[in-house]
Image (cartoon, rainbow, N blue to C red; front, side, top):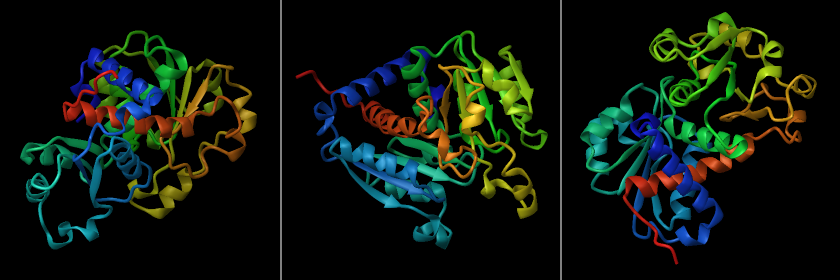
Length: 304
């Protein structure tokens, strides 16, 4: 499951469903009675895994699965294909996170039930993108004609790659790509998405230069787990830190998002700024995952 698997119209329908879930939670409290979600997380996660579990429990379903590869038969050498064939016998839908790019796609090809990509390596994080799109639409009332600043690790940040691909489908989108040279957006994103679709973008190194021009500032952490050596990570990790002083450069309607977890790239003094929306973004992820589960299971809740 990738946001690009849905048409723009289907994405709006998904967001409308999430909005209805947010406004009328009781209406959906038993929608997934007797349905089971399997969470297959081959690498550590807090927010994504618990968000999926909360989504299914909020819908009245149940959850089974594992939270790390060492507690699964992967530690014995079992393939993703074999694992998913077995899980298809136990559950109705799967959310999978895997360190290898393309692993959820392999699973989907061998599964009898829907497989949701909950993150694969440094490649994609599509359900985070759904939460991002929903949050941006709630904040600005639209997903077109926006200037989006993406800041930090744009090379390994799978949330960034997914968001660029998703937003590039809307008119009037412009990106400011804020990163050190070593962590710029991968060539395939520039070439196959931005250049191919003629999306205007600018690569800058100073956050201060971009802040006055943004509708959304999307912060990311420098991901230690994506680096090959400690020295390189330590050199990069403090490159961008958003604080209260820098926020003075931003417009009143420039909202700050972050897929979390935060390390030190957003100072805690920003948390009280009304433009800081990253914790609301985390809550929105639950609504969007609830909407996605219902859609993939083809469950429709009638009006009472």
